[in-house]
Every structure is written in C-alpha cells, then in structure tokens.
Image 1 (cartoon, rainbow, N blue to C red):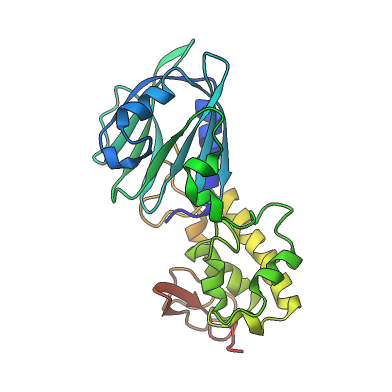
Image 2 (cartoon, helix red, strand yellow):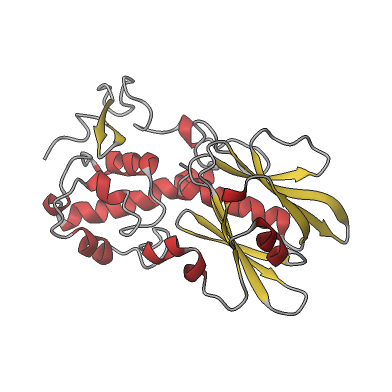
Length: 287
C-alpha cells in the first residue's frame, strides 16, 4: 500500500499539474470506487464545473479544495489503498486496463487533459465533499488519524505518551494510524533499523531516549523517501507514471537474505501481526 512518501509524491504532482483546471465532466467505470455520494451520477454532478484550487494530504488520504462557479467550495477525497494510481493523461490516450474513474479537465489554454483513477485491486476510494460539510463527516477515516509525522505535533512527548505502557510490538504500534498517520510497513522497518530497535520490542520496554531516536528516524526516512519520489515495488507511480527510487536505497525492507549494508549480517524477515518485518539481527538486537 502506498505510504506517506508515495501519497505526498502524488500530491505534489497533482499540485503541479491540475491547479486552475475545471472539471467539465467525467465517467465512473466502477461504481464502488465512489464512496460518497451514493450514486456515481451525484458524484460527477457535484464535481462538475469546479476548479482545482489546491491539494492537501492527511496521512494516506489526498484532499483537494475546489472552487465552484457560485463562489462556494467543495472537495474531492481520494485514498489509493493498495494499488490505486492517479494519472495525468491526454484524453486521446488509450485507457489503462484498470481505469475506474475519469475526470475530464479544461482550462483556457488546454482542453485535452483528464485525471484518471486506475486501480487493479479495486480497493481505492473517492469522495465528493459538499460545500460547508466538514471533511471527516464524509471521509470518516480522517477521524481516527494521529499526528502527522512531518508536523510540529509529532513531538517526543506526544509519541512517548502514545506508546506508554503498551504491551504490543513497536512495529505494530508504528502501523497504527491513530498513533502516527501515514507510516506503513516500509518506513516502519527502515526507521526501526536506523534506531537499532528490533520490531518485536514491546512499546513499554522502550526508554524515552530510544523513543526520541525512533521519532527522529521516522521523520528522516519519510523525508529521504519523499526526496526520491517514494518507493515502487509493484504498482506505485507518480501522476506522470514515474517510479519512486527509494527502493534502491532501502536498508532492510524487502532485502531478506541479503547482507546488511552496515555489518554484513544477513537480513531476516518474520511475520508480525500478519505483516512482514525485516531487520538485521546484529544491528537490531533483541531487548
């Protein structure tokens, strides 16, 4: 599933491409991709004539503010889930096999563009957010999100408080979006490696100093990945189809059986709460 760096990469691409374009129409090719309103016709009708003003990100959600001709604003929410892609295309381009939603865009100097939502496994979702309605009312997953790790709210104090006394592995806690928003499997493994913490270490056993180091490294790996356009192992691309490059510098994720870059020990992989966890047995000793 795309994580914070991948979603942020998409957000930046959408900011660069779509602002100032109006949605003059569209086509929903898979009705269940639209999570709100109840019908695809209402979804397209709500967006019709609205102009992209800005794109924001909250955790793994993409949120756009749109200006309407009557002076009000509405919104568009998107969650890519496992295999979703938002692609900036020419209308004449052949449709990708798993295209689910098409938004036809126009601007004074360009009437040839469209934004396509392509999703192989069909778990992705889109929401139209009506004027004067709070986003979390419609996109209910926003209600459960913890602090943004790249914001001033992600402090050592807040992180330590969220982990205090928990008898759960730290890797599992990092994947809990109520503790910190946007971190997933890839960057949890990477941050834990840099912090010298085994993924199975219980939250309650971490000292404040180790929590502070982990917080720092969560921010570090997210910023490093954003700079490289995220990670592409299977489906993720930016809005123009460009692959992310972080996978080429990953320290432990997806490297089981390979030597550790730091000490040469073989990277191991275990299953933890139904997810893979990659680590170096020497650099991340059991505690």
